[in-house]
Each structure stands twice: as C-alpha cells, then as structure tokens.
Amino acid sequence: MITFDSVSKKYMDRYVALDNVSLTIRQGEFISIVGHSGAGKTTLLKMLLAEDKPTSGIVTFEDVDIHSLRRKHLLNLRRRIGVVFQDFKLLPHKTAFENIAFAMEAAGRTDEEIEADVPHVLALVDLGDKIWCFPNEMSGGEMQRVAIARAIVNQPDLIIADEPTGNLDPINTHDIIQILKKINDLGTTVILTTHNKRVIDSLGRRVITMDKGRVVRDNEQGSYVL
Image (tube, rainbow, N blue to C red; front, side, top):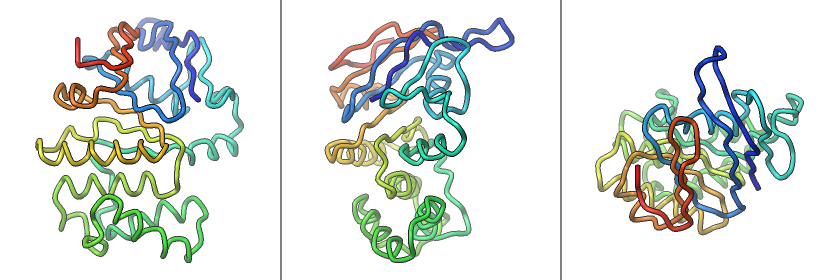
C-alpha cells in the first residue's frame, strides 16, 4: 500500500531528518512508530501527507509517487487519509455534529449523507449522546473521540494517529486505542506514533523504531524498546 524507498530528508544541507529510510506498509496493518523526539517520526508522516518533499528517494501510495502528483490528484489522495492529532484540532464554536459535518462538506458530501453518517460515526466512537455538545462541554477523551470520528467519517483507507493519547489519562488512553483497534479490524490501515510504552506493549502489533532519522528496528509483533 505504502512504500518508502531509500527516502532521505536534509534541511539546510546539514540537519538530517531522514536517512535512507526504506519500509513497506501493507493494507490493513496496524503499525506503531516509536522513537525519541527528533528521531524522524514527524518528518516521516509529513512525507506521507506530501507536506514536505524528500531530498532523495520516493514515497509511493498504491504504486503512485506521492510527490509527483498534481494538486488536484494530491487533494484526492489526502481525502483517503484521515489524521488524528494530539491536540484534537476541533473547531471550538461548532458542536460535535458540526465539526464532523465540516469535514464531510469539505469532501463534497451531500446534506443527506451528512445527516445519515454523522450520528452513525459518533455512535461508533460511543459518543451518540454528545452529538450537540461543544468542545468545552466535553472531556479530553471525548474530544479525541470526536476527532477520530471526524477522521474516519469519509471512510479513508488510512488513519494516521499522531500521539493521539499524549494529553489523556490512562483510562481515556485505553479507550482511544480500543477505538483505533476497532477501526483497524474493519479494514482501515492505522499508523500510530506514540511515546506510551504501555500502549505499544498491549497492542502486540508491528513496531517500527526510529533513531536519528533511521529505521533501527522493525518487529512484526514488537514491544517498546528504545
């Protein structure tokens, strides 16, 4: 599904963010990417979202070079990727329904689709009773679940969850990871970045460890080892 082929990224001809990274992510996988700050995790995700270009090497999505796409086709690609952030990035003056509907409107979905799909996706993340709540009326865990619902409502092929539990307590962390596992079980590929050792060890899924811009470990059923 996704391939990084000898991808390197240098800034100012000095700082090496990625150093000859090669890896393949298969359709339907749940992959965790770990590493200290500055290891290259964020740069790797930026390459996948075409927010930055490699200095050398190629990143492909279903055999298509991401960084060769024209703007229209790049936007179409990004619609196939849902992103969940550590700080939620919800619109504060919109309800849970409206935050999710906004993402659907941006993707060109109809009013009928929005009315049908938003309650369904909120139920999937166990927030059916919060549909008309504003972000300041929800807990951190509830806001993150709204963010996940927004990320999956357009039925993407891939979910990128970038430190989604970084601001949450252990109970909410567990709930968020269970939701991501449920999404993965339905066939969506999930890429998770996290510093949470307990999360990684509990998953028992593939773990990619990065250090100084390199992939230093790639274990199919890994644990948190730095």
